[in-house]
Image (cartoon, rainbow, N blue to C red):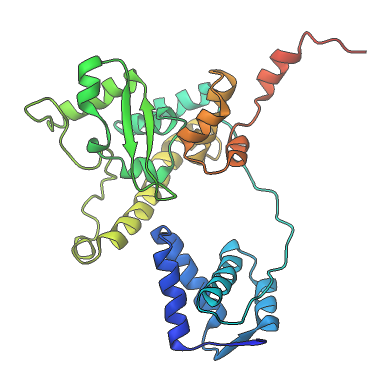
Length: 305
């Protein structure tokens, strides 16, 4: 089939396929936007239309939506398939690695309790994503186990980037400071276990209460974006960037943590992959960048001609 007729039924099937695949909320929204951008008010599409579209729209979402249309056609026995041309990907820009001294300056320049939040971003597992620390709740941490041994903490992260759960370790020093914060907030129950919702609310926890009562999933995603913008301006720009006199991205802490675990702690890269929640080991290898200082220390005594 050279042309694919765009009926209301086909549009519905494509959207239904996207939703049923279980993509994250923001991914579903992005695919829906890409679908609308491609189809618009068209009654049909063909190879020429799609290839011209892909020349103008180079974001991976645009290419993904064409692949999704192919899959929906295949599942519904529709004789239509477009071979997506291979394009040369631009090299991925990787955030700089921060030194331990720089991270300490960031923490020292940040007001409480957000200094502890920065320490959690860096110190939990192999580093957290900003969305994970924003959503981190007191109930995510296994307090009963820690109260019994006082040696190390464990947190179960839910609704991560790929909608999977993963377990991360928490250093005992951070556990003690989190527990002190819970005591300060007076949220300990009769068994001494913290009882509350978000650990680090961004002073906007009452964000859009009307939307929350109607669509909790949409509220959650809008809150995360709004909370990050608040954190970006009030913590990173006002405190950390001013202290270091350089541009800071919160994801730098995650890259720095992975590199530290690999180079200093000598943790196997496969274990770091698990802690980061990466599906592909190649992604983890990008995160664990080689520190020039450690390379120098390893090679300083090698012989040269």
